[in-house]
Length: 158
Image 1 (cartoon, rainbow, N blue to C red):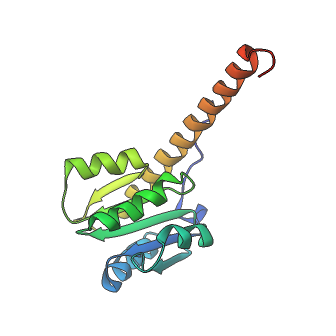
Image 2 (tube, rainbow, N blue to C red; image 1 turned 30 degrees about the vertical axis):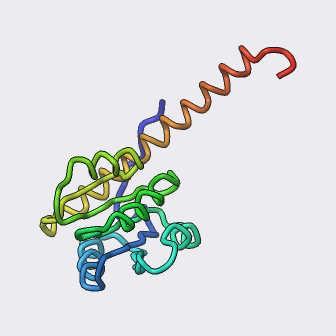
Image 3 (tube, rainbow, N blue to C red; image 1 turned 90 degrees about the horizontal axis):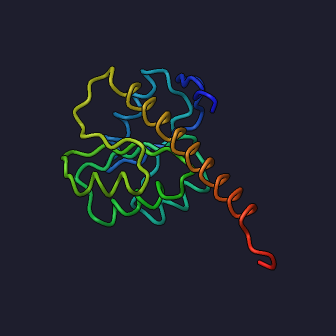
């Protein structure tokens, strides 16, 4: 198994930010830019179908600032994470064990209770990208193992 590639701010050129308010989007954009991340763009995730927007833009990373999300808002983010095409970092205002569990089950790479300082975002983003890459490798290895098993044990005529 190969080791994961080193992630640096310059290796990502498409970060999509979805935030509960324009002010929160601006704060995240500034923090990401200050950390050296480029290609940062924002959108309002609560107007229309957020998953369709993410599919159309196909970023390399999705950063979502949920604030205190409604159930519908959480589900929008979880739908994006379930696609398994983009690492998702979610920032929230309050911790809730049940919601954290649901986020992890959905595939959210990092679920962070807000309160980060200016030097924290790079570590959070790098961890999320690394975790997402590890999960993608595990899924690929699982799929290859299932295919090999099916090919070897597949009954004739199936």
